[in-house]
Amino acid sequence: MGCRERAAKDDLLRIVAIKDACVPDPRGTLPGRGAYVHPALVCLDQAVRRRAFTRALRAPGALDTKALRQYVEQATVAEQATP
Image (cartoon, rainbow, N blue to C red):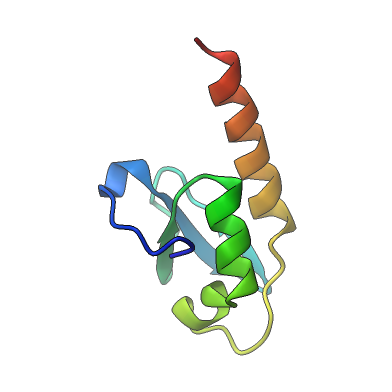
């Protein structure tokens, strides 16, 4: 969604809207409409800048992406730490 590149579903992170926030759904089990993005800060930033989450999740207003950003940052750090 952010970089608009195609990838396998397993390589992407599912995002759902809960109340007024974007929440990561790594297992893909949360109810509701989902959107997919690469778990990388570059893709996340592009999606936020384009307001893609609001559009894809059909949210009535702006969505908070703080929890999503924190999750992606932690995943990036963990991925870099493992050889």
